[in-house]
Image (tube, rainbow, N blue to C red; front, side):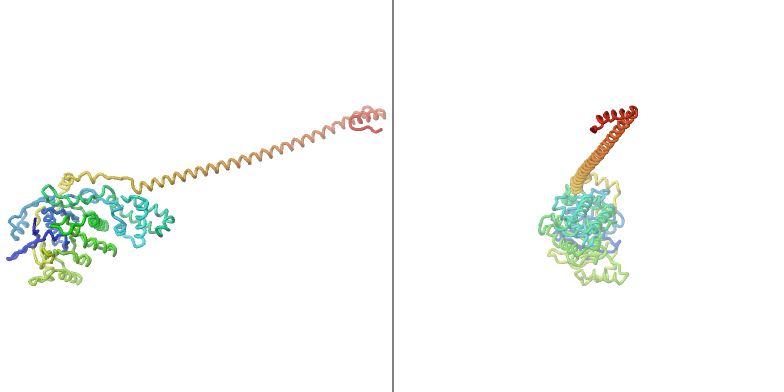
Amino acid sequence: MIDSLLIAKTASAQSSRCCLIPAMANRHGLIAGATGTGKTVTLQVMAERFSQIGIPVFVADVKGDLSGLSQAGSDKPKLRDRIQQLELPDFQFVSCPVEFWDVFGEQGHPLRTTISEMGPLLLARLLNLNETQAGVLNIAFQIADDLGLLLLDLKDLRSLLQFVGDKAKDFKTEYGNISAASVGAIQRGLLTLDQQGGDRFFGEPALDLMDLLQTDANGHGVVNILAADRLIQAPKLYATFLLWLLSELFEQLPEVGDLDKPKLVFFFDEAHLLFADASSALQDKLEQVVRLIRSKGVGIYFCTQNPTDVPLKVLGQLGHRLQHALRAFTPLDQKAVKAAATTFRPNPSLKVEQVITELGIGEVLVSFLDAEGIPTIVERAFVLPPQSQIGAIDPQQRQQQIRGSVLYGHYEAIEDRESAYELLQAKATEAAKATATATAQAQAEKLAEKERQQAEKEAAQAQKQADKVAAAEAKEDARLAREREKFLVNLAGSAAQAIGGSQGKSIVRGVLGGILGTRRR
């Protein structure tokens, strides 16, 4: 078992070694300093030491420099001078086993999670939602749980929100008021997140945390490097992703108590982004995770420019301190220097407040916890030179590393199983079909009714026309009868004139009397 990890060393005549005890490595730490003072190299050296004793490491590579961990370093004049200065006769250039990860899938294995795993609290922060909007998002997640809807990617969440918004009146009694304005604000936030690359971050296959806890055939811990140079351009996404990862480790890893060495060491670079604009609920959650995750065997190291970037409640949990130079150009800077100086256990022979502004590149004020968990007296020392390559590797080397990994091909293949989007689309399709069927039936009934009414109208018109024809025929019959009678009368008159005389008239009367009526006696 390794008793201690040499991280820094003084260059004085009475040289002293600044070592980190592996059993104390899960007590967390802080690496701070102004830009260009050597924080990245310090982080690199610590990652090497942890890896060499079998501790897996996760680190976000904001500038791309940490990819050099995958290659052995080379002899250079400045390195040679530092090696001689610190009297390191057994120094060797070696590489570390490395896995590259990338949310965008371009410079490493695609790194994804699901909407459900991210949860409403972190999503609310990611989308910069206010309290009311965050409440609506919580309701949407609860409805999804109650209806058995899987939320895997952004289209699932967008479909769910549309469904919840459309059915707001139905859900109001059970879940509370669902504002259309809040749903719209969340949808706009999701659209922005989609444009920033969130569509690649959410989905499956999701990251298996056990893939971050691997060792190689030599027993060296794998250094998991997240390519964050592009991710950092979306600070909310970057910070929320790291918070999610830390939260998942806290939730999934079992309690192990104090170990001889951590199961994983986690480095948060640009740590100030984690706490910027964080709600009180989120800060409380983060403080809880930092305080309790050490019992899960995880050590957390925050890297930032100034210790004041970290909230006091979290800062108080960080036992290991490595402070690079700070600049004091303004009254505010001077106040920050003084605050940083007071966080160390005093060294009678060292004026910390003054020394902080005088440190050179690679020089650091360091205080680690001893075997009893007590901070050691602060020392001014030089960080050891890294054994791996300083600076970024070229794209060909990176791709070679990615393709040579045992994980290659697993995360690259995107899965899209049935989830909320597909189920809600199916429901919408069924509802549309039912609506179409009901509409068609209503239209058929309407058409049948119209045809019935038309038939009745036509029947009535036909009857009216028949009655009219019948009336016309009766009128015509009456007319014909009158004309026949008139004809007979005229005929009789003509006959009487033809016969002449009284005798004739009498005969005519007799004839007419027989024809037209009763003859008078």
